Amino acid sequence: MKIPFVDLQRQYQQHKTEIDQAIHEVLDQSNYIGGEKIKSFEEQFAKQCGTKHCIGVANGTDAIYITLKMLGIGEGDEVITSACSWIATSETISQTGAKPVFVDIGQDYLIDVEQIEYKINSNTKAIVPVHLYGQMADMVAIKTIADKHDLIVVEDSAQAHLADRGGWSVGASSHAATFSFYPGKNLGAYGDAGGIVTNDDQLAEKCRQFANHGQLVKHQHKIEGINSRLDTIQAAVLSVKLNNLSEWTSQRRKIAKQYNEALKGVSALRLPLVNTNSNPVYHLYVVSAENREELQEYLKNHNISTAIHYPTPLPFLECYQFMNHTKEDFPIAHAESGKILSLPIFPEMTTEEVSYVCNHIKGFYSGLL
Ligand SMILES: Cc1ncc(COP(=O)(O)O)c(C=O)c1O
Image 1 (cartoon, rainbow, N blue to C red):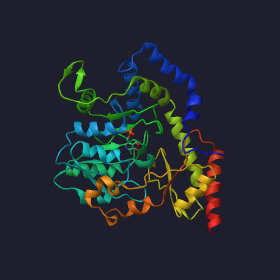
Image 2 (cartoon, helix red, strand yellow):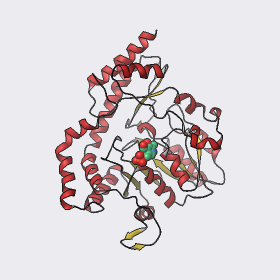
Image 3 (cartoon, rainbow, N blue to C red):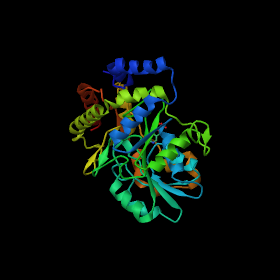
Image 4 (cartoon, protein in one colour):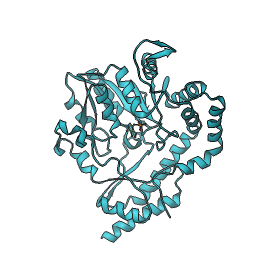
């Protein structure tokens, strides 16, 4: 058996007719930028998120940048975020002119809310929690801190479409939540795409204007903006796929449950920690593994693809060397980066495939004993 990490081809084959038809409708109309298909996707996605607005943009990175910039973040400001994420989270904070300030993670791989207040000073303007691997950060605690210190909150939800925790869904408790629709994401386009959701009418309008060269009406550029529009073919694909997102999320949860049950007795592994009242969407299923490198090599030799998200915590990336962080500043992020391993997970993965992965993991560790 050969187990890919993600199999986008399998999903396409299952939905080929509807997806091809949606793409052909755009080709037939030859309307590639803007139009009804964009509006319709934005309305459907906002509805599923339970927010008033969705603004489609070119990718999940721009979604963060545009939102922070339109909320007034810039030169001289500090923005608190998690030490563990993809670089897009901190890169976009820097792009606004602000400084990213990192906070260590907890055992759930999410920003450790207990440590946030130690990093707040008079320059702090915002917090960007990351709902890493598909589990929401503790938004109840984050909102309490943000309200106390009058801070903006933008949720990086690139990996957490339709997740909820403590009665709040993504985007419900903050100024805005940003999404990536990169092909491998839980809701993935057939190219780059992203979105911003918010309940704030004024912010929604500003983001829409900035993402389209500063215009809401053609040729009326009230401000300078950027070109970061969601393109129409991607919106057409996303609309078809959105109809299946709840079903795919259930499938991901079923697979995670199967992994949990099959691997719970393996003492060399720490399985994903799910917080009380939290409903993760398992963009990734990440274990903390002893002898990680050997395990990954063993699985590779048995045709099982795995990955590491992410090998280096943000503060230790070369581009942030000037901040002079030490491993003592982020002990959990540092320790976990040497142990985390993402196992294959995608909605179409079969129970036999999950069993195959689990049996090989168990086989590896029993061979070590
Ligand atoms: C946590 C996180 N934030 C932001 C992004 C950026 O999204 P995109 O690749 O669509 O620009 C990603 C994508 O990998 C991500 O995982």
